[in-house]
Length: 146
Image 1 (spheres, rainbow, N blue to C red):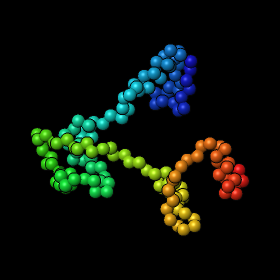
Image 2: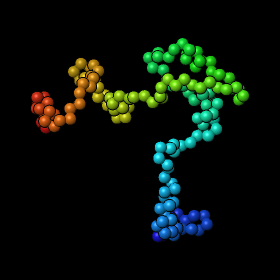
Image 3: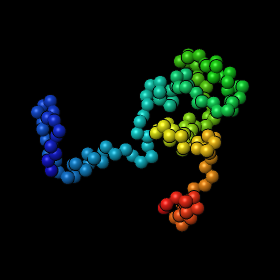
Image 4: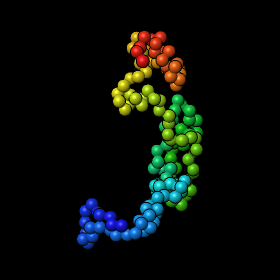
């Protein structure tokens, strides 16, 4: 099997010739093992680094849920002495947060889908209707053509 390169390499190679088994073995080597991280950090960003808590920002507080101990600890970070052990950050939750569908629509497309056209107030999602007959009945009640 001959693979034509997009551009010639610096040594002049313009194609690779290999049998099907060699090609499959090279492709299989590039597939990461299951349930393993693809990105591995080293140095200060490594998960086992003692200095990592000093450079990674703390998770954002939501509605004042942090205790006074957490607030004082975040205001007074530990000193950066390589010999002294750095205390592990409190595992109070994950950094990712749920973003509502209406907020995603506003951020992505600039649409305000949760604003009432009649009064200008904020609407709330009450139910999702999946049954086609119920959808047709509801639209017929509103006078909308299906």
